[in-house]
Every structure is written in C-alpha cells, then in structure tokens.
Image (cartoon, rainbow, N blue to C red; front, side, top):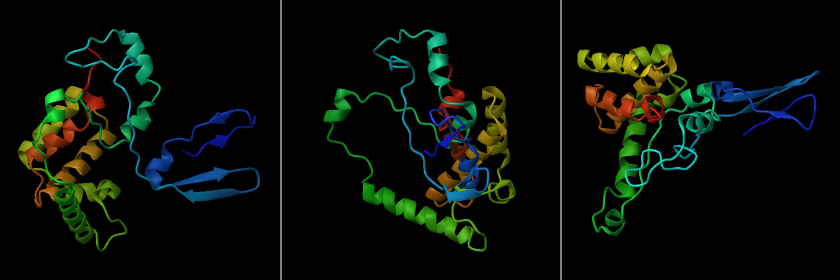
Length: 207
C-alpha cells in the first residue's frame, strides 16, 4: 500500500480510495507531482469480530455490539464499499476434512475462467477495457440489462439492506461475470441473487 508523508516525517496518512477507482495514484509535492500505476487486485481477510467467533454455530461470541462496531470501523466504509466481493468462510468440520469427496478440480475451474475472460475480451474488443470490473456506468447500463424478476430482486435487496449506489454497480458487474462463467448471454435472477449473496458485509448484522 502506498503511503504519503505529511509535513511531519514521523506522521503518515493513508491514501484515499481514489486510486482504487482510477487505477493510478498521484504524489504531489511543492514543485512537482508524479503519477504511478496502481491497478491491482486486492485480496484481504479479517475475523468477523475481535474474538473471531461471531456466527460460529458451536462457539459463542462474547464480544459486545460496541466492540464489534469498533473492530469493523477500522476499515472505512468507503474502502469496504469498493471491495467487490465479500465472502464469509465458515469453519471446516472434521467430516469435511476427512471426506474423500472432491469438488471441481482447479483445471476445470481454470477452463471456465478462461472461457469467461474470452467472452469479456470479445464484448469489449472495441473499447479500452478488457473485463467486467472495468465497466463504467454507461457500459453497465448497456451490458447488464436485467429482466423484470432480476430488477425486482435487486430493488428489494437495495431497500432492505440499504445498499449504496456503488454496491449496486458492483452487484451488476458480479452478476454479469457469473452469467459469463455459465456462458449465459442474459443475466438471470439467479445470477443477481448470487451476486447479492457475495456482499456479506453489506447484509450482515452484528447479532
């Protein structure tokens, strides 16, 4: 993470979230400014609460509402809003660890991802972008058209969870990507529903 120095060299301030939107960061000084590329993929992990047991079906969380709020407030709302996918990862049970059953192989998943990326390359071949994540608002309206059921589902989710306009755009981009992974030309309500499920921290309450 890039950090910029304040007037006191012993003090540092974190940059704004603007580089996440623009794909570059500009460092300005008295006589000049320098712009660096900052197009990156962020993968991060955190506990749900200070003790780590919030939502655990077998172990009780002893954190108070205030402690949980203070803990999560360490990550600003604007920053959290710009993270496309929030996933809750539950504890793995012993039976699952010892199970002989296997899911899709990495090779099979890679094939689906390559196909989805090829679909996106073709979709944006006359534009200056390559993936769904790079779409602006005009492109979202063009390529993320919803049917009536999907529109209704998204509207109810927006109202129920108080989602922001930025979260709305993120959900549409994710839904478009899920549809691409299924090689579906249209975005269906199942794709929108799955995309909404991937906004865990927007939907989750403390208790």
